[in-house]
Amino acid sequence: MEPFWRRDKEFYSTLLKITIPIALQNLISASLNMVDTIMIGQLGESEIAAVGLANELFFLLNLFLFGICSGTGIFVAQFWGKGDIKNIRRVLGLSIICGLGVAGVFSFLAMGLPRQVLGIYTKDLGVIELGSSYLVIVGLSYAMTAITYAYSFGLRNTAQPKIPMLLSAIAVLTNAVFNYILIFGKLGFPAMGVEGAAIATVLARALELILVLLVVYRYDLPVAARFRDMVDISAGFARKFFHTALPVIFNEGLWALGMTAYSVIYARMGTGVVAAVNIAGTVERMAMVFFMGMSHACAFMVGNAIGGGDEEKAVTYAKKLAIVGPATAVLGGLVVIGFSGRILSMFRVSDVVYHDARKVLIAAALVMPVRTFNWINIVGVLRGGGDTRFSLKIDASAVWCIGVPVGYVCGLVLGLPIAFVYPMVIFSEQLFKGVLGVKRLVSGKWINNLSEQLL
Image (cartoon, rainbow, N blue to C red):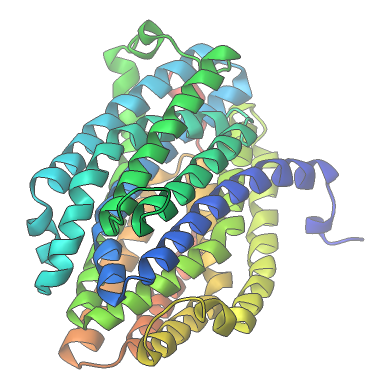
């Protein structure tokens, strides 16, 4: 008899149809970040550090938006399993309202208090000045990003992942072209450096939002909600929704603040350390795009099965993905290690930064299978099954009780090098999440039919 993970053509067909477009979209975005870093890297290490730290604010916003859209995505996937378009559009409205509220706060911080924000991460006045000029401009893009995210996640969870992928590709290409023109002063434009990169980002985000809205409403897709559809929300509906969605938002928020704490620790270790971690992180995100896409596909497949009343199928999908994902990630990690030197050689940095970045990247590659399991289990299985409160407990405790204390003691108290600090942080955090996650997955307590509970 074949192992259970080798059977079921429907499973693999659905998995790839959802995973590949999402992975390609993430790859496109990660490639843009890498191109940004390479272009800005031609200006110097201070510029890399400045834009890297400035983008920590967007990284935080991104995680809050991811939490909001993941929370709403749980309901959208289950409502899609029932064919309930009316409630999908209600949930979309809640997603946009929450996203715009959060984006407004981050825009105020970026445009009104840029120096204070960057002062949290570094005391390097040159880096603060460069980063501030970037933040004041790029803050204009945050509200557009929030709306785009809401529609993109809605499309993904109604089996339309190719649309946001294609539109993201157009936006990324636009960003790359304007980056080249405005950073270096081509086609008659002045060389604007980091400010040029910020303007390019704003233009690309605006184009992406316009394209998403045009396609969604031109073809009357399931998320083509009219204003009255999105605000037709009773107090009871909102209360039940937030009971499940808020833990996901808090989860991403606490995790985001944990990532900020890591950034503060690395920044206090030196500007070169910030540059090394940002470079390695950019490459790592490119390597993880397929597995991130797989976790989103898992959430859709598990949630869709539960919403359709087939809990046995949801359990089968969860078990298969918990094995297939990490097994594939072993190969991904080996590829990253094998090509790490060639990839990092594209960046114009000192030998010290190059070697630190390579050691950080190798550590990330070694832990990739465990991280993949955690992504699939927490973002895919547990959230897809509506087990958002336990997901919050795993993520928050791993970062704040394990990762941040380890990073603080090793990096700032003992003064150990980043080549030691980063592996200690990532290995301890991911192994902790993996152990707790396996126990929860096996228990089966994560299955909740939210589409029934919300009505």
